[in-house]
Length: 202
Image (cartoon, rainbow, N blue to C red; front, side, top):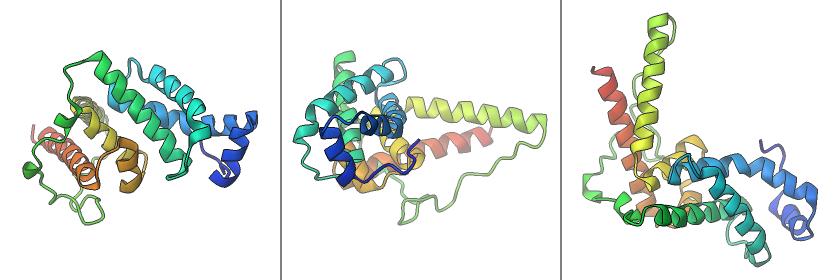
């Protein structure tokens, strides 16, 4: 976990000087998030491999880092690009632009101006064995819905709702415009909400 990671101003010169302690801090802070993002784009089978490839790319590119974004955002953008490249190699028929789809069908009404749920899905409680079973089944339903999302939608949802990145950073990481980033996030959230609502209507 990231425990008082030094500022970029302190950290980057140490990394450039091949400070092993600085490398250890960065890996500890960001590796888990890198794997999580890679998994969102390429799936679990090669996510660790993609993260390792991204680390090598980070080390090679660090002397050319122009600091137009934070170190964290820059590293995640490398992960995203590495994952998208692998995705194209793994399945040449995948078109990442298809993940955006028709913007006209977006229903932003479940979310407020800040991008948070305006009307959250129903709250569930695990007070009895039946409730626990329902909760486990719901978790499986949500996991299946996440797995079924197009890669770019899943990545946007992972970065925003699971990792708490702001939209500006997400758009830099995924290299999409702000409007397309919001399309990806809204579509992903709508599909997850629809899956939850369908679950409770069974």
